[in-house]
Image: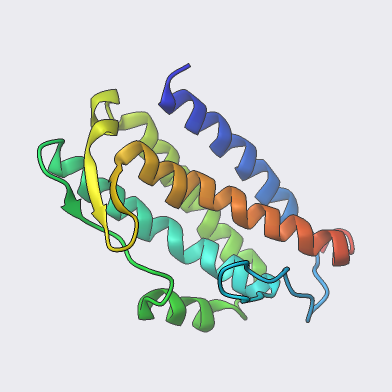
Length: 168
């Protein structure tokens, strides 16, 4: 199985999980478990706001790396403290879930189109992340897009386990 095929299968699975979570009400005030490295805890609005903001950001970063080719790694990415990231999460955390899911769903489709259009050789293109160093495009897509979606779907599963109250 190619990297592309595996990534697309995982993307399909996480999209289905997120669609299910988008159809549930979450009790306000319930928080995720503490992040092991920061201690940070998020409510569902913060998780959904982050989902809606990170997909387009990392797609553009992946496109930048793919366009640079395999010769020299191109600088890309951001860290958790990036003001644009933090600001978008805070700004959008109170948006209606229907709005955030609509944006997330559209961006997942954009990611799917990207994965379907990138040639296999481009997965070897390399980027230089400010804290993680040199990464292949395949690893970038895995860690910052598909794997990142899976991590936040896990958080929403955790929140729903404590507070999912059925359809809206």
